[in-house]
Length: 174
Ligand code: FES
Image 1: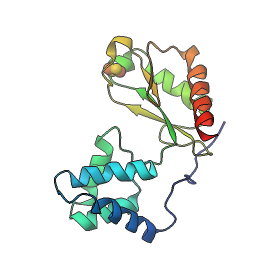
Image 2: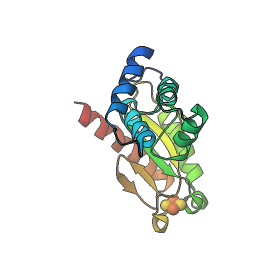
Image 3: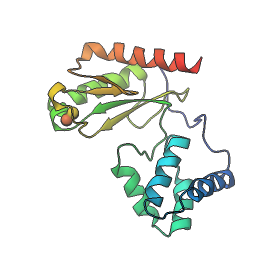
């Protein structure tokens, strides 16, 4: 259906613009407690991922090592070091869901969308993410699409979940 895109709608247009945006974000946080994490959250919200150039700027401004910032981006499920679509289909790949077939669900979603985990459809709209246990093991395997939780998901439901995600994306865009 689609391929990877680096043309994300809200991608920064230049390094200096990004540096200014990061500085503006950081200026909001006078209390240094939680400064880094709040800043990363805001960058994620603005660009839908943590661009390397933005992490460089945070590192310059705070003295926190770039590698440490990347580790934070990797550790927290709500942060991403890779570009993400405007809409994200999350597949829980915690132990319960993994045993109950999460890898097969991921494979099917990848085939339906024509992208791999960590990639974005060419219109920048949808990406797929594998996440750790979302605390709903009783209804494993679990897929979450923009806040909508699907439990006991079977392979035959994948097309429907993707179609619903597209429908909601299109409705919100129009
Ligand atoms: S492992 Fe998926 S909800 Fe717990």
